[in-house]
Amino acid sequence: MKFTIERATLLKTLSHVQSIVEKRNTIPVLSNVRIEALGDGISFKATDMDTEITEVVDAKIVETGATTAPAHMLYDIVRKLSDGSQVEITFPDEKGQLTIASGRSKFSLSTIGVEDFPVISGDKLPTSFVMAKDELKDVIDRTQFAISTEETRYYLNGIYIHAKKEGSSNVLRVVATDGHRLACVESPLPQGAENITGVIIPRKTVTEIRKLIDDNNVENVTIEISENKVRFSFADVTLTSKLIDGTYPDYERVIPTDNDKNLELNVKELASAVDRVSVVAERTRAIKMITHENKVTITTSSPDLGSAAEDLDAKYENETLEIGYNFRYLLDILAEVKGDTVRISFSDASSPSVIHDTSDASAIYVLMPMRV
Image 1: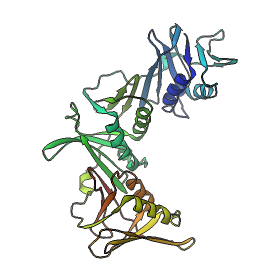
Image 2: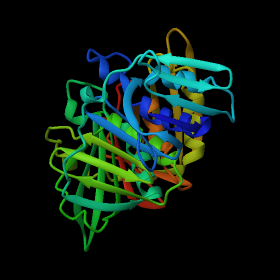
Image 3: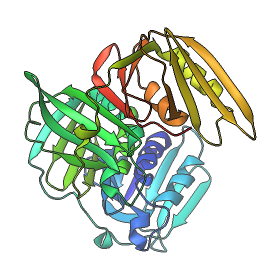
Image 4: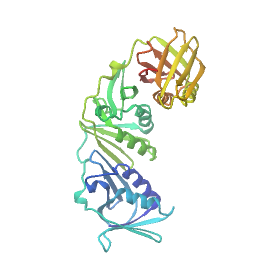
């Protein structure tokens, strides 16, 4: 195998594949990227046995062949080469290693044969549909922050996607929750997605596909789903992942339907006030929202650090409520509100609050109160 490739092209591809590779591996070949020179391009493949990425790029191929080499080391080498340089990769060299040469620099890396490299993407996935890149980015951004990181409740460690009949139309619903906050977003149901009864896409896969679609100039993403796998394809990139094998909880039961006290205010003013007050709440993460007629007070206090309070104009016409929140959770939700105003609906100080973007009915957020 021998080929020459632009450093910028190689670096971009290696940045994608090495992020799949775990830093520590008990199986040595999983630390490697599979490199294959084909007749029409160079294929780079990496996997952690749950997720697999394949990316094909153009290069000047002198000789075909394949091997595997340490992914993170190869990425670090290419990252430190000169901008605009050409990189020549040869395997095997006179010592049976992979050689990387660019300008006056030359590196030799130990390899592992491709016969030991696992493949998880071979089977066909029966459900297939296409989503616009911007639509996919939007539903990920508005839910990703609520994915749980607790490994004990592994079934919450991803986003839950399913087809749902909403009124007279069908929608694709995307949900994430960690038990403290919940994000539920709807998107027009793509043709071919009608039979998705519910799949849980892992957090790592969601993170990687979000980075990949940002890094590639494409209009649409093809999504294929089976009972235990999901595949995202666009341009020359394919990301295949196992789904989380578990039952997602009945999230609709935790979305209140009888919160009758509505507070409306400017989302940027609220986010800025919470951010300022949170300086004193950095240790406890607790702030208190006190509603008054057409006004709300954001406050916090700490025996060690002091106190802070800020008043905001608001639209509110019910009795006074004092309700505590984790300020980080509240800011995460407010960051995804696209309109100018946000509506927060309460039942009482101990019940979950419902948060709406007043300009967009396709998203709903639920935030659990916090004792302050």
